[in-house]
Length: 120
Picture 1 (cartoon, rainbow, N blue to C red):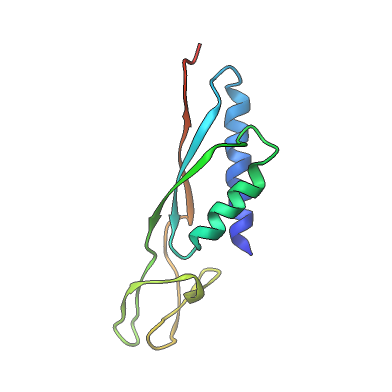
Picture 2: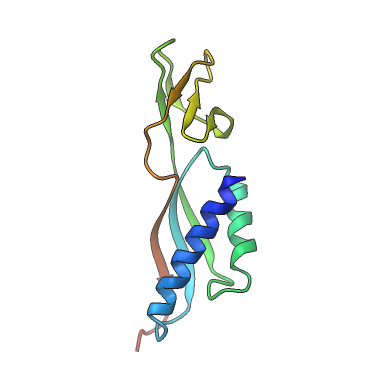
């Protein structure tokens, strides 16, 4: 399940940023954008599991979805893909089954680490 590895990379990135700013208040939320080809429940479960023993423990994951769109040349389908329509960097058209390469942004993007309290 590559979703778990994406979250593991996200957690590592966040922990590195926290370590660089040790004197800042604790992280209360992590804001991300994610492709709708990643099931939201898997995203949240992975985040909770992988942050338990880290400085992100107790932080809330705020996830904003975005669609990965396909323009099928075979059948003129135009629309969003779901988890089962994507295999690595390959899309399977949900209408006709035609296979094409995906050209989309990163599946998971860190937007912000949210802190509360003074930064002194």
